[in-house]
Amino acid sequence: MKCTINKKLVPMKAHYFLFNAGSGPVTPYLSIYARQLGFSSIVVGFMYTILPIFGMVAKPIFGTIADKFRCQKRLFLAAQILTAVAFLVIFYSPKIHTTRIVNFSCYNDTIGFFSNSSINKCTLDNLRRQNTSNMCKMTCGVIDQSLLCNKWNISDHCGHDPPTTLSFTALTPTYKIQLTNTFLFFEIANITLNNERILTPSCSNGSPLSTCHINCDDYNINSLITETSIDDSDAYRSYQFWCLLTFMIIAWIGQATVVSIGDAICFQLLGDEHNSYGYQRLWGSLGWGLIAVVTGALIDVLSKGRAQKNYTSAFYTAAAFLITDFLVSLQIKHTQNSVSTNLFRDVGALLLNIRIVVFLIWCVSIGMCTGLMWQFEFWLIEDLAKIQGCSATAHVKTLEGLVQAIQTIIGETPFFFLSGIIMKKITHVHTMSLVLFAIGIRFILYSVIPNPWYFLPVEVSQGLTFGLFFACMTSYASIIAPVGLEATMQGLVGAVFEGVGVSAGSSLGGYFYKKVGGPLTFRYFGFAALIICVIHILVQRLLQELNGAKYSTSEKSKSFNFNLQQLCMHHHQHLGNNRTGNYSMSNDLV
Image (cartoon, rainbow, N blue to C red; front, side):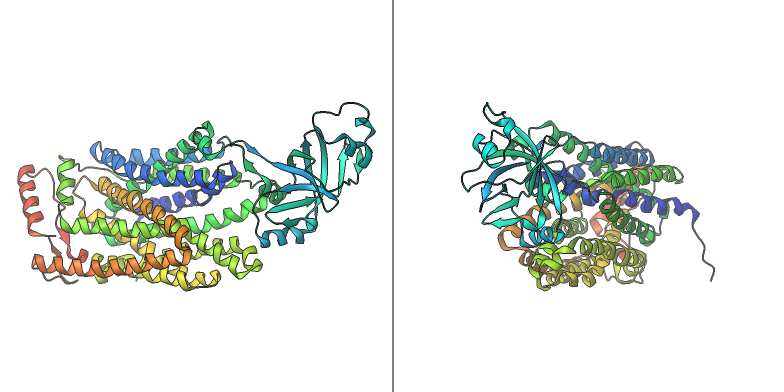
């Protein structure tokens, strides 16, 4: 049997690979990068609460514009460049002002500095095991003159007024860091003053000697003592916050537009072969999985010895892939010939159909579960790792990298490839029920697994819960879309899934995670998914009985219901022969 390649679809496959390869190096790290810019977790959480809302608004708006003015490809290409530019601008976003202030004091006749930063025992043990000495530059307020003269023998500051500040370099051995109640005490082994004088400082226990600004060579120590210099309420009014939020919104809108319009173009290229969508989209999973893992390792390599993580490679790699995607996408042979004569009436007709409403509710349900998984699966992994002990915590980032690789390469890729066969075999409606069932089982397993490394085999189910789901959602949306409204329908469905479902799931998941903890949160969501699965099966069966139709996989086509069929006939009579209707549905949907 000779295998033939559809050359018309090659640029589309390349687009999915390149666009996801361009998103993978940046998107997973944006929240961490925002924290590195000085924003607290509360501020970053607020950003990620409103970002999906902009995606919800952007997808149907730009989809409608693309359909109305027949400019799908132009908007598609423009959004790719917009995303690349937004990523680069985010990289150069101004940092919020941060401070590193410690109390210079004595403890057990030893001089050092205190920090009230929270730290877990594993992190402290790791620091001690480094057995290194780190240089910290300190600028302190006025220090008692008797200490300078009698204990430190600094004659320069004896007999006259001491300076308002004293700057020196302190050597702090990591193996001598102590945890005292809620404070960390960093012992100072010696001090270098005026680039030449090395002292072995001593003192007597008493009140803090001074308050000092400090900057250490070691990234871990710096991260422990760094605090944002302004309160969260003030951060919302800072220009740094609005710059970063604006750039992230632009990037989010760009990505949302590329995804929704890109899928619409793909389905138009496929024609009646809707079930072949998975063969195209699987290249996106490969691009994301391969490049995200490589970029993560590259960030660690290039950040060795630095005070902060170096994300230069991630952002420039992303921009390079997105620009390449733009150049490749120029080769997509796509012409948009059909256009809806009454956009709102056509979309409104769909929203009056009960099957479409059930489909959109299904999108919201899956979106809520996806929001929980996107935002809190790594939280759960790290919480379980802490319970397992320091050895598990030490390798938790490696575990998270493996989780992403298994999800995309081993999970999503084969199921995108098989999605068309599965949906043709069991129909779209039964595929929807299968996805809900898989999510329920997956979340319940999360809630009972004690060791996070046991998550790895479970991650293969990503093929069902996202790969098969996404192929089903987009292909169903393409099939039910009226002629000329393909991008509008993809945007509407994407907005419902992400803007409503993912946003609500992230918010609700965060509330339950705080109230009952990670395992119970995933268990509750898992049980809810199974209940919705049963309801979905019963509702679809009831709709079949009400419509008086006997559906089977061997039948070629039937309309969704009598009322919608009558509406379509009236609509075609009104339009004459100027367009061909697309309301009659292939029976493999139901």
